[in-house]
Length: 79
Image 1: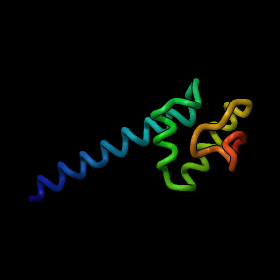
Image 2 (image 1 turned 180 degrees about the vertical axis):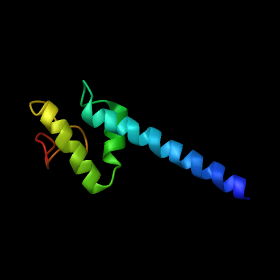
Image 3 (image 1 turned 90 degrees about the vertical axis):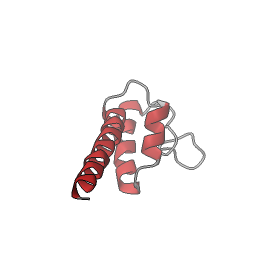
Image 4 (image 1 turned 60 degrees about the vertical axis):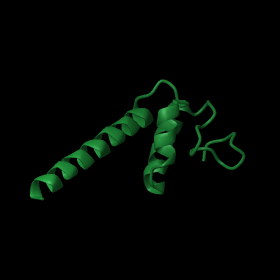
């Protein structure tokens, strides 16, 4: 039982690390703010994390249309 819990814990940490790492790469080091996987990950993050991610994207791509989750009402401007 103890070994099973350890395996599940390690697997959970690995999944969170991969998803979190992919999201972090998207918001800080992307060439395209309209990357589908990045947009989906960012839109599902908790509000404070998503706001930080949108601020990072806006600082890099202020003159482009914002991705889903970072757009203000109407979808044409940054939040």
